[in-house]
Image (tube, rainbow, N blue to C red; front, top):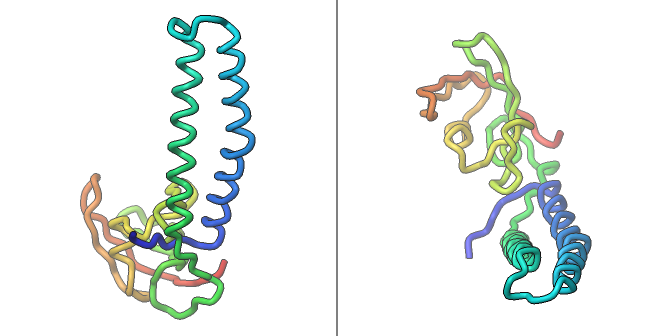
Length: 158
């Protein structure tokens, strides 16, 4: 059973999502099933079938989240420091091709959100950044072609 690194915030977000699914969402699906059952013959009841499908997907999602939480390896980013990029680092990158900067944080797979600047530790970009320092140039392949960035800042805990 492979461990899944994640930040404390990512772990807590998963726990909260699981709590909502097990309470609020389960109750809502149970009510949908009861209403559908009241409509009569279950063999020809599309509402009942839809509610059963929804229940199945909900339970599968609950099992998946429980598995991820059981395998979580919570890393306390606030205790990390240094000038080397590693899990939990917030990295500022300069893109010479676009003459622009972007700031990204390296997090676990389950908490990655590119739009929010959170990249998975398993992504090609994060793998290229790991163990690098300020002023290093990193190159890696993306679906859109080869990218090159210069690391301008590395920090932890914010």
